[in-house]
Amino acid sequence: MRIVIIGGVAAGMSAATRLRRLQEDAEIIVVERGEHVSVANCGLPYHLGGVIENRSALLLQTPESLAARFRIDVRVRTEALAIHTAERAVELRLPDGTVESLGYDELVLTPGAAPVRPPIPGIEHALTLRDVTDLDRLIGAAEATEEAVVIGAGFIGVEVAENLVARGIAVHLVEAAGHVIAPLDPEMAEPVHARLRSHGVDLRLHSRVVGIDSDGVTLDSGERLPGALVLAAIGVRPESRLAAEAGLEVTASGAIAVGGHWATTDPHIHAAGDAVAKIDAISGDDVLVPLANTANRDGRLLADVISGRPGAARPTLGSAIVGAFGLQIAVTGWSETRLRAAGRPVRVIHTHPVNHAGYYPGATGMRLKLLVDPDTDLILGAQAVAEQGADKRIDVIATAMAGGLTASRLADLELCYAPQFGSAKDPVNFLGWADRNIADGLVETLQWHELHQAMADGARLVDVRTPAEHEAAAIPGSVLIPLDELRERLDDLPEGDLIVHCAAGLRSYIAARILTQHGRRAWSLDGGFATWADGRATAQ
Image (cartoon, rainbow, N blue to C red; front, side, top):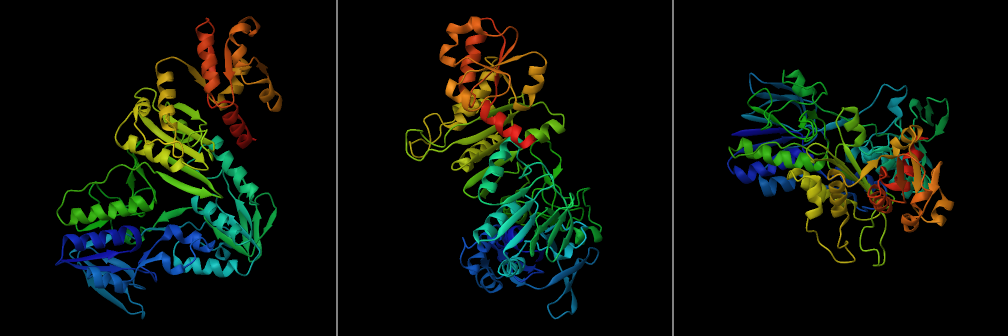
């Protein structure tokens, strides 16, 4: 059997090598348009910044090494021009420019996704970063400039900005939205904004590039930002042209439509990777998730299916992490913004723990956010921003989501503990306890973006922090009654409904419990002053 794979790197090479391990006698041919077939694409920005010193470290396999170990026929600089489904043949343009037809018994499409290049005047001046060839161009441009503009503050944009700064280049980072890293909620993104700016990045939010030339860009405000290097990191789109022109079904988002076993609408053509529509774990709808983990996993399982073994696609959570000047930003599932836009009810929990035991040297603060279905208690998403430990906590929560654990069950997880690694009460456990307290009716919470309206409706805000904390920074309209004085000063409380807040939410929970047991209705401001301040800063 001849199996032809169009596209290498993650999904394609995972499929090819798995196929060989399962079918020693199959003829496996990989067709790759670019120069390299097996590249650590996620490492590209870090070679730009010098973290990964040797370019060769990014080249994981070569056609020669794949032929030697796996007897796979890899053909680089060879472009697939068309698929002829009736003849089961692929039309190829060879490196010398000639065109030939290659027959197949089974065809695998793993063409990946291409950077979005919007119709901005002068877009031809902007570089992109998809492969090693793009990286070489970017490094060449970086060596010839002292100032750069990065368009788009998503994962790639933030990584490139960080690594350009590492090269000593002044960076303007332009983002059309109100905050960086789209899967984050606004209040969770504010610490990222602060970190970028503290390292010299000129962050321009709510800004659009309307023109590009060889010396920089023009914003929709009319302002000019100088930069001989301009990188477009606006997003990616599925490379589905071949599939569409062959008559295969393509979704409204432009992705190749596949069933649960990666088969397209042609039974002899399968597809996987960034070009393919995934199943969203929260909604069950088609979704684009261009992540290396998903691409590698699906390529491997696709090979199982072609080889007659059981294998099926599973819904994706979109778990991802990015670094920004020592800050870790990790997400899984949906954000509060996305849930509310979809009309989904959501229970929101913010906490501000430390990454390991506070008494052990080096403990640093974390910002955690959990999104929960209030009817089923199932976890809908989570976010973490921290110096250390964001990956561990989001990985635990993503695993709990995959296993169908409810949010309150997080309290029962038995997680590793030693003072230098965590806490006896891990931050993930605390999220479970907080959820259980709300679900059991022990406390009502209010979100930072709901505070203004609640106070306008007549609720009074009580600050239960210390006098020094209140004097340093206070929410307008708040009344100070420290927690340790609360029981003795019940008569000093304002009339009517109360909202209590502290620095991060723990003391206000205790205060709310005291007040409700003394007959007062009291909400705890979720996440406390810290979350309110972050949200307010982003909203301004």
